[in-house]
Image (cartoon, rainbow, N blue to C red; front, side, top):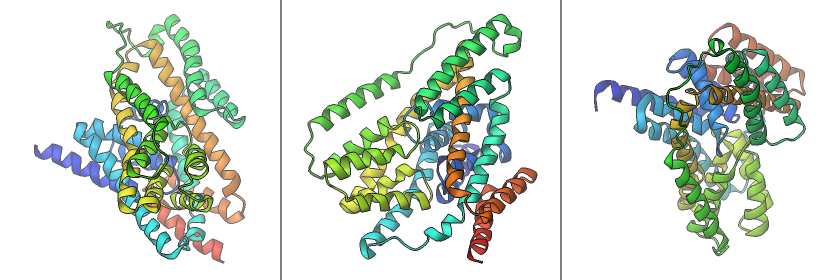
Length: 397
């Protein structure tokens, strides 16, 4: 391995360890931090390429933050970077969840840090708002995409599923933008490809067969608790989980609490609470649950099982994303999916603000953080840490 490649992989590992250790607040915060690092600061990717990865990742099941990160890892470090970036992002969150699970089993309660972290929420909201603002300027650059974005955002408030809106938004984009580009090809910026075949990766067929096998095994498996059953459950959930990570709660409630009786409802609520106040995606609550059920082996099996499908889906997407930009119609579809993704992110921010911005201190923190980060290129990690201290002081006094 040459020196330059080793340097790239070490930079990638350090970046992902940092993201995995500090990304409190959900997938949008991790994406905001990732955008700052790889687009603004390090310039590994253009904004358009970063948006394409986000848009494509939103079309498959699993946590978008993990799938975007490992896709970036592949582009910067090849297949080894693909693996390293994912492991380094997930490992810190899993380690923290395991430590909390140990404390929970020892003391029977959550550590008293939730009140402190509540003050961080306005800062997190500001970081998310900045990321959506910056990416939105690139993603929504004409009136057709603006119409699609407004439609998707509005429909989401009426409860329409995220994956349905992404597909419908992409289809509308193919009609609105695709026809426009056919009529005015010089404005499209996309050359007609000499290769008219869109190749579906073999990995996608492998994934579909694997998911079918999982369902067959799950349907004929004993509900008694074991590492095998725990793995099958989380593999199945990760292969089906579209949209918000909060959909995971419905799966956990329905099977682990109601059907299997492995968890009590209070344990489930505590697991979700821990996932919300610690770094990592909400799906990393699987680590906490795995530890509660079967100790360290359960935590390891649950973590691997909940995130493994994300690696497989991302591997399948790598060749798909590059192909989408080669054809006018699929390029139009991806543009519309990107705009729809930004619209869904905006909808998430609005929904979260309803529970976060209920005190004047929250508004002060949100606006000051947004203005500082908009005016100066301040590292997102410093914003969160500094904002947490200010928030703690304001809410205390």
